[in-house]
Length: 175
Image (tube, rainbow, N blue to C red):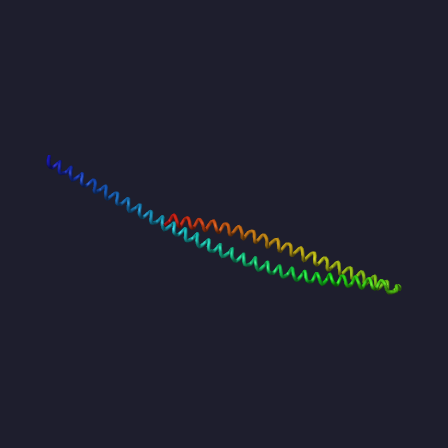
């Protein structure tokens, strides 16, 4: 009976040791899984942060390009406006000269010359007007494209801000 009792006591002692060993193994496995998960989360956070940095650089480049384009368009429009004012002054001057010529004695030769001159002046004025209309239309298209680029930049900034906030939240969860 003593032998059975001793063997039973040994069994009771061995079972808790086995259970403790099993629990230790489970704990080690859980610890390894936790460490792997933590490393993965840190890697993802780093990648997201790098991606956000790249997007921020792209958005900054787009903004700088847009600003440079705005300056170019402003300079271009000021030059065209200045040229248009000059053409307008020339138009007034030619109209004045034409009026003065009409006051001169009319001869058949002068009338034909005046008509020819008047027609050529009108043709030049029409050409000038057409070129200005085309240039202003092109300027309008360029300004529209610039506005579109600026709108896209705003959307990119909003997205960048959201992603940055998500990265910060992920960092908080990891820590």
